Length: 147
Image (cartoon, rainbow, N blue to C red; front, top):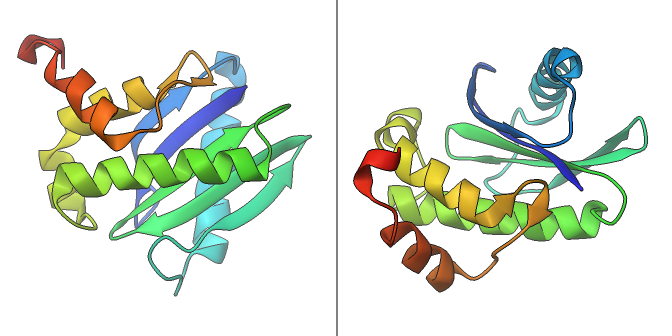
């Protein structure tokens, strides 16, 4: 199961988070753990350079993309290889939405579109769509008032 997809800015503020199957009382722990993990390891990292960690029998794959950091957490069948595929689709969708590697401002300008993309990629903890064209088609079908 995919437990979480988090996107944070360069100072560690969470911009988007999606938790699946994580109790509410554990979410704060995961937020602070992932932000600290990124602060310790992502300084000087290249765009889309993947980092892997494990914590409490779960896998974490994370990367930096422009001014944002993307974290994907999974367990069981979502090992580091499966999470690498998930993070590739997420980063590709963010780049498509923003037109390039995002600044924090361009990310927030396209926030609604990025959230729709995330919902089409991961649904209730399961990787749903990986094809860019299909994701683009599906988010076009959403009425604009469902942001």
